[in-house]
Image 1 (cartoon, rainbow, N blue to C red):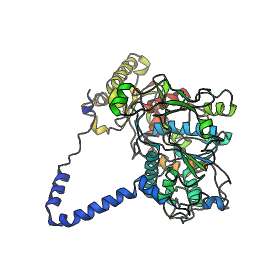
Image 2: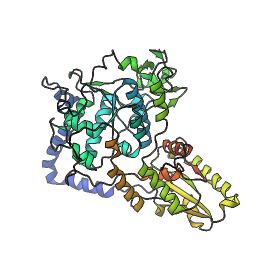
Image 3: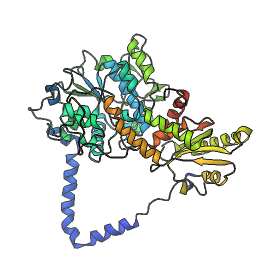
Image 4: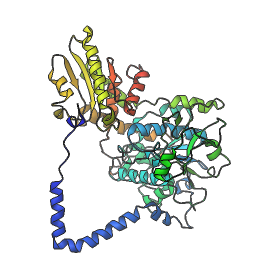
Length: 513
């Protein structure tokens, strides 16, 4: 079945074109066009990192933030920031690496929000075509600011359970909102969803704008001494290691001569010990904030794209941390929602299949995925125990059921005697109520350092956000972890890998949840 039968028709743009042509022909356009171009030019320059950087060349700038001066932040604390990007599963992978780096370098990790799917893209490490770290960090900052102003902020620690790391003191953490409020002096009440966050909000900003703080954290303020050190090394030049005695040696994966000639570059990938390069005694060590770009890594052609740290036999604390971050479960509200759907809606052993159009791997592997699904269903049909009340199948998809007609899913749906299909949607009550519970729990704020700014948490009507978080995907993954008849995922998908990891760790049937 070709992808065209599985997707909607493109949106027609004829009406938009007609409108634009009419506007261009109008007399009013002659007067508005120069003004429009002026606004576009100003907007471009005001959001351009190099333009913003010039604002930081100010001798009055000091890194000692008002929050630290007031004693709200631990004196002398050092922090680690990074630029999450791409889809949620990639962001979780980066989070794991960030926790590892923070542990090795003895820094407090600034825990970021979940960015919208592909709001910021890295590019391709294997093709040596990636955004440079400065631009990537600034793009992430702008995306976060947009999320705050639109009240769509949700911490990745609201979704991924980091409580075991906090309780074990393996690595220190601080929620981005707490850090931005106390270190930057920026009021983040629009990003709050509960009393703890609102209690930190001061209702005022000590720095002139989000723009200045974002520029500084992006590593643009090179002249602000001992404040922020921007890590410029990325996957084109560096593979970070730890305690493997291969300092400054060539990595096994290098760009081919053909690629170098075609793209006209001369990158050389070297292995570097992250502790020696960025730890005590290095130029980066004195900086209050160490700011990475992407921390995404994956195996590739016998090497790793960016981070090659899988063991630390001479460092028991880091070796333990490596074990802890291998699997990070969802927070309890999401796990419980998945269990509830499996027990109270499906009510029978079921098969789960992942057919998400927005998954970048689906378009490359849809034939293999459907072949595996058909093979699995045929195997279940041959099992008499599975045929008694039909085969129950939970379909993890972003294609609405109304569009299943004429597809394999439509065929399964029409055969009501043999199959019963289930799917979950944003407007379903389980999703809505779980979203409210996730926001109320404030796991993100609780995941790290909290200042004693108030004796009791406060909540004002203008602070707490009533936004509905986008958590459908996470609940679907939790449901699939309960699929006792098996799981059929998309080959190469990080979503499928996470579900398989949840199944391996017996998340659904864990008595603690």
